[in-house]
Image (cartoon, rainbow, N blue to C red; front, side, top):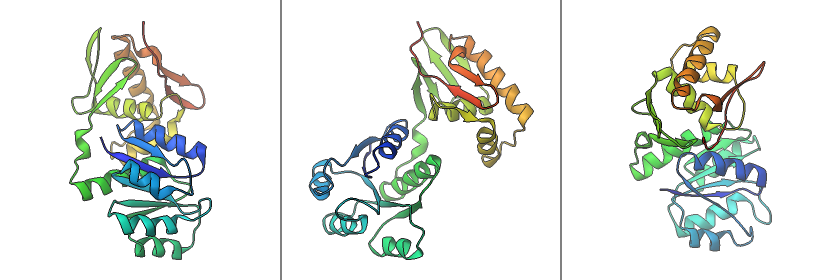
Length: 229
């Protein structure tokens, strides 16, 4: 399990980042005292650092310089500023990537995985197992297993389930699902999405999980987290 240090003073954003990354089995840490960043960094010994530029007391550039004087750990900058000089400065200080706020969490995760893969020769494709509502989902085998048995899904059904679980307890719009499927070159239409979700729910019903995929009329779909009885 990789340890990630998120140096971000926006608590709500930090907790959302932590929640999303935890779904990918990353061990995520934050900063308790922004005047003692390097002390906490040294104690945690993270495998990767994500750092905001605008921070209390000292900015992210300052802490990047200090971290670089101690370690070659990969660093990804976050910034709500749109000055090209910020990106140039980040790269000159030895950052591995730069992400502009606001960002899509899929982009952040993809960039983190790309850096880990490059630096540690890490194959993110090995992360294929996910637990949800007491079941184990094998993304490679397109299967869902719990005490009631195992069901096999199509690739589209697995992809849709994965998108919903990655955003569990939150509504994922039909447009987001269709867009992500199109980007993945699965070329799914609005009507095909409805068919796939309905079929996915029926398959999940076979092992008592269909109730945990909800349709939000006029909004989209949501995967709830629960403990089936």
